[in-house]
Image 1: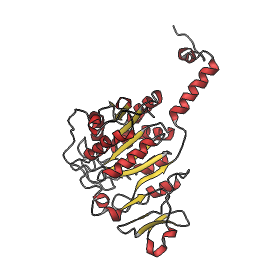
Image 2: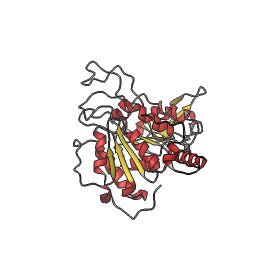
Image 3: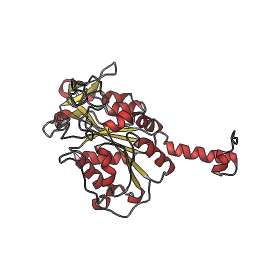
Image 4: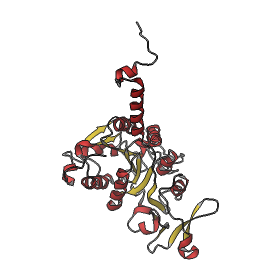
Length: 339
């Protein structure tokens, strides 16, 4: 993606700006994971851009010693698309939240995913609007009582992974802010993928929605509640690997005890499967972060990358027109003079 850079450290990737999130916010651990990972990726700071919209997560570019764009609400994927397509030499990251990406920015998000623009999208999901002080978001559970839903939310929440897979995301993964090692491995995989990489991060908002993911990410619960997805391996979980996932004859998935069915009957994870149906079924396995929940890479497939296809199209158009002059190309069709 970029030329090999001179060695750097976390300090090189850390800006001089004071980090201004609430004490205890999960954003701190995500920021630390990214800053510690960047020196390992072999990329240059001057070729790296973080693009964000509006929300607590959107402060992220200020804290990275790279180029950054803090744009308007929900439009980060659109701005990042233009940047990635016009400057394929750059590493372009999008940092967004569940409100920013899935509400006002939902249309921009799904089209970046379907086009497969070369972006790495990190979606911080805390199931709440934090910056605007605690309104319900597109991922808030039904019945959620907030300032904007005093009698409880009536809305069916989005599952971000399901949305991404429905938009044909070529890479979709989930991690959480309580496990730096897992975050870094998922971010590394996402960065290496050519095309749009989408990563949902369970992120705790300790002021307006504290403990939203505690039932699955809490230290005492992880072994029994997080289902690690490893390509080519039977899907099993639990402190002793005693639980597993099987696929029934109708294609539905269910949780089982390995001792009851045998390991040979467990579903083997295939993140490279061309059709997204299996990955989508895994994304629907839990009805919310209070049931055993898959974590890791759901899908990683090769699809044509949008910027490369556009570049070839422009070259072909210029060759057909002859001169290769862009201004001449734009004026070469049906044009007229007004006035």
